[in-house]
Amino acid sequence: MTDAITPVVLWRPHCPFCRILFSGIEHHALEVETRNIWEDDEARELLNRRIGSETVPSVLVGDEILVNPSITQLMAVLREAKK
Image (cartoon, rainbow, N blue to C red; front, side, top):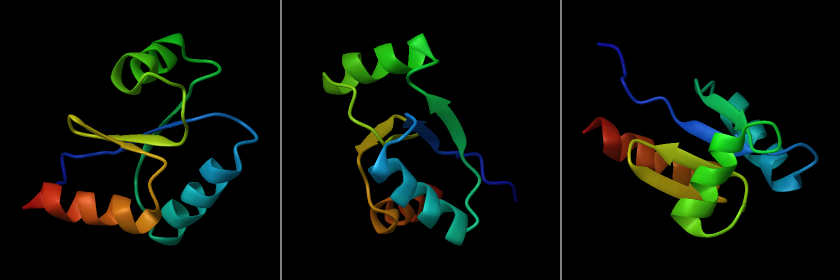
């Protein structure tokens, strides 16, 4: 069965918290979509509309948005979403 949920990571260059999250994503071999808020106006506007700031990394999992999650938090939400 194919997992229909692909997390969308909203990030920006030189963000140390983004680097930490991407390291965990790589370690767990997660498939994610990435959107750089400095190059993607729609992604930046989404963040401002949903959380009122441009805090990154933020991760969209379905309709849920995780603000600066740890890889542990992201993995837990993904496990729940698969149920």
